[in-house]
Image (cartoon, rainbow, N blue to C red; front, top):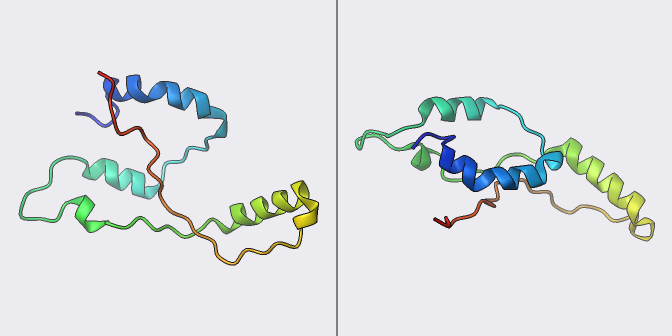
Amino acid sequence: MPLLSPDFMADYLHLLAMEWKHLSLTVSTDFLREWKDAGPTPLDRPSRFEACRILDPAPDVCFVKKSLAQFRRRFPPLGDVRLSQVWAGMIDAMPDTRTD
């Protein structure tokens, strides 16, 4: 099945429309590499899923600082709150079931 198939569009386009104003889309080098490498992998080589088991990107420090500043403005009594740890990662939030 192609990556952007009609089935994909039917299943997820309404979700995209609901959240469109909250999204910021970019095309990264990872995206381009994965697009190029999509498809079956010979059985005598590791698949792209085996090569990259853990998706653990570095946090976006600029975003974290902006978020903390907004939090402090929104909740002045908690303005001296400090971050003890910052994490970034991939969260699978796509529906896992189909309705057809």
